[in-house]
Image 1 (spheres, one colour):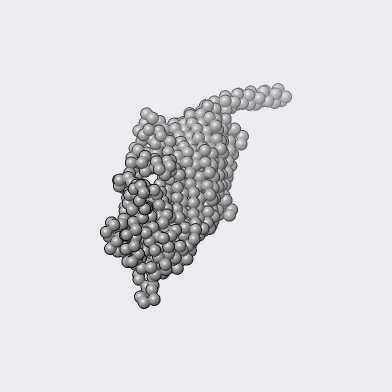
Image 2: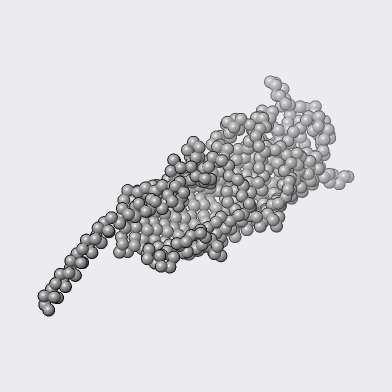
Length: 550
């Protein structure tokens, strides 16, 4: 009996040794087997367009964790895809997938992963050569697991993290850099993904993104779009952008000359933008960025137009067109600007020095900034109420109504400028119209404009007194007075010194102005009002004889 037990023990020990040796051999080769399978499956799932490579693979069978070191995912240059919208490559120091169970996946078709960490990745996207076909407005991107998936019905990642990443967007044709993001960190908690046919194919509990130093070269290749920092706060539903700028590559004197034709040079700076009541889940699910309130503490905008150069190229886009061509859909219920400065400079075609208008201490309340299908179908209007100091002296307010679905860009402006010395307009009209205002005080100017892409009409009610003007010489030769004495005398006999007068009621100026298709919206509005001012003042014969162009 003792011998039988002894032999049996020896048999068990031998079996354990053999099993352990075989298990160790399998475990020893498991990394190699997994490496081959990962590479095979990546190629298979991408129709052999993408390949993955890595230096080391470490799989811990005890806790179900996997680590890949020096990971490289890139397109296979030998393969031609059917129709890729965009291609990409990823270089990462390591990819860690922690605590997942393959047995549970096979049994329930549910995959639960404790954590996924992508460390110091460099993500490069390649912009396609061909222009993208325009999609139907507001078509939501497909998210979630493919409905054809046979092996997985549900994926949950408790923690997904991308740490110290950077991003580059390149042109696929010549590999020229289009956009860069120097550093970003991304975290998402309790991410759940189900099949696309479910009502909510993606859910999560928390999302955080911090990005630094973004630069994007615009399509015209003479402007950059950039920001210093972008951060999200999921708990408080806020998104904050620090120092967002639209920056021209050239100075205002070189900008249009470099392009070779007239084009407004626009510098735009927002030191800080804060989006409150932001729907992050809706943005991921539908592609629409919705914010209840947008707060802009300060803004600075400078526009410069050189009219000495010829017209060429495409007409300047209006705000409605710019919104529709945005890379993503957005809807901001209310946008507030607390303090702003806006200036417009124009170098006239006659070669005189540039003329300038500006507005400071600007405050704005804007409603319904949107490019969504729903807003366009309802023909909602972007409504703006703006108040400012005009040329640092006069008080100004303006109400703007921009319907989103107007066929020819119809819109309305209504406003008032009051308590202003008219001689301050010399900085703008002197070099353009060869007119200098010697004296005059504006009590108030009310304007009402109906306009579209091409034309503006309306009226101006201008209350002023003690107006005297001088007509300037076109060419001021040596030892001659700058202004034409005889014509100035005649002009002041015709110009209404006061409006209204004691004997006559208020003279209402008529706005009739055709937009130069290469001018900005700001220039279009300013010159439309100026046309009504000139009509109100009254020197029509002199204006026509001098071929005044504004």
